[in-house]
Image 1: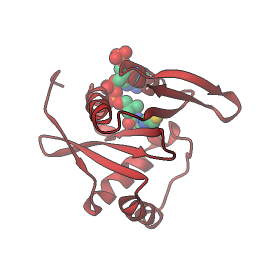
Image 2: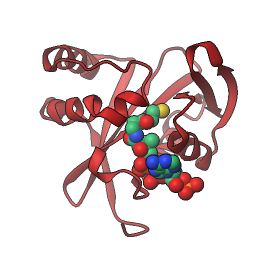
Image 3: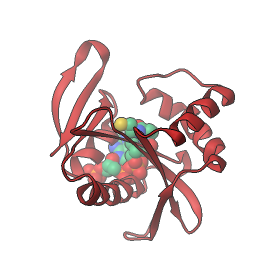
Image 4: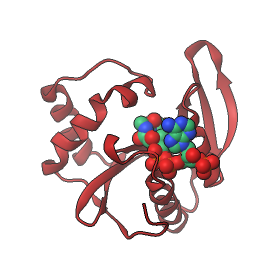
Length: 155
Ligand SMILES: CC(C)(COP(=O)(O)OP(=O)(O)OC[C@H]1O[C@@H](n2cnc3c(N)ncnc32)[C@H](O)[C@@H]1OP(=O)(O)O)[C@@H](O)C(=O)NCCC(=O)NCCS
């Protein structure tokens, strides 16, 4: 993968439902997620349609040369927080795209939501994600051993 290839970000739309469903049900995604079970397409679609309408959630698609390569979800659970989740297309992982996409989103958040603290919840065995989030300035602030995840923030 080229070091600085052109990744474009746009808001997710209904036509993205199936791609996101495939990526969500991918084995490695499920192993690295706090909810490891498969979801049916109907369940996913209902969640996705509701998410697209929500004031408290924004989903972005990352494309590279017109190919959908990843998604980022921003949740706004309370006034001072923006929670960041990322999922890369399973065939495009470990090529540096997660880092580029998260950097882009980080700059966007710094501009648009400068007053919010960024937060991410990472499963304890998810070393790629730990490396990824620390590379853009997140630090681990809390480990919830009994539930198997840690909380990371970026001020
Ligand atoms: C975690 C994820 C977002 C990382 O994105 P990516 O494009 O695969 O990662 P990158 O290639 O940009 O690499 C980011 C860092 O992770 C490391 N990494 C990548 N794949 C790895 C792997 N399989 N095991 C360990 N480290 C890995 C890279 O070496 C890099 O660290 P470095 O800068 O110190 O070299 C992606 O793999 C993914 O979508 N996984 C499934 C869903 C998930 O875990 N989402 C995050 C939930 S918090």
